[in-house]
Image 1 (tube, one colour):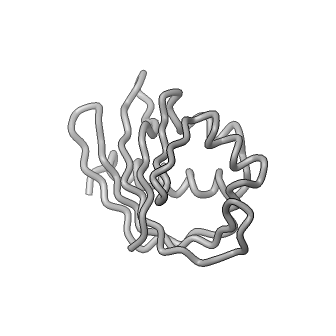
Image 2 (cartoon, rainbow, N blue to C red):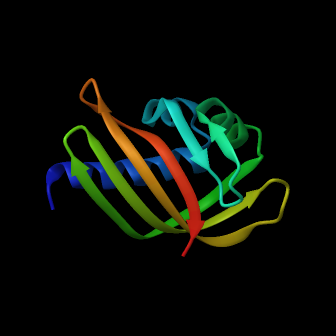
Length: 123
């Protein structure tokens, strides 16, 4: 495993810590301005909508335990597939444990990796 692969795996873990803590600065720092999240339902959120939904409680994340984080890097672009068991309550529903798969893309901008896209599903 390369140092850069380990760095992106750590960035994925940091993303979850930021979501759980509702850390707006942390979320903003690692999600590119053009970030798009595609939910399991197919609905889409841009970066501002996503961060707002986390902050206002539309999306509540409580814990995340990671089963697998695979990374492929090609120049300044990367793909990451994270498989995590996530305790969450979303869209007014109760807390549930989700086996959540995130298929993500990242781009290195100004020497810094940021998430640009994420598609959520289950595993």
